[in-house]
Each structure stands twice: as C-alpha cells, then as structure tokens.
Length: 109
Image (cartoon, rainbow, N blue to C red):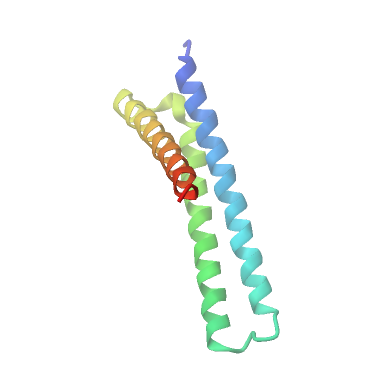
C-alpha cells in the first residue's frame, strides 16, 4: 500500500513530539533528584516540589508512550482516526505558531 506523504510527515512529527516529551520527563526527574538531595530536603516545600516533579515526569512518560504508539501505528489507523490525528497535529502546530507570534508581539511593549 502506498502511503500518502502527509501521513509520513504527521507520523514523524508525532514521534519527534514523543521524544520531546521523554526529554521533558527526564528533566522533571532530574529536578526531583536535585530537590531531594539538596540542603533543604526535609522541608515541606522541598518534599512537595519533589513529589510534583515525579508525578509530572511520570505523566509526561505516559503521554510520550501514547504519542509514540500513535506514531508507530499511524498507517494502521482507520480513516476517521487518521483524519482526526492529522487535524489535531495541524491544530497544535497552528496554536504553537500563534503563541510564538504573540510572545514576539509582547516583547515590543
């Protein structure tokens, strides 16, 4: 079966997004280790920060695994699921583009 090029592009972008989520997860885990081994590790704020960092890291890992699974199985999706996946990817890209342009405009004030 010949796959459309848009499907390949969407799969590659989704997989790249999953890798970014994994890197973010590792950053969260690194923050939790730094907070847990710091001087104020027994203080309630440090414990709360470490707990939130661990929870955030695991949440990002779950999201990365879902995105990676979707990227690997992009070609096997049903037609409606493929259309929804490509539409959501396009919407996310346009929102990100708008946010960047808004931050550029905010710097001028």
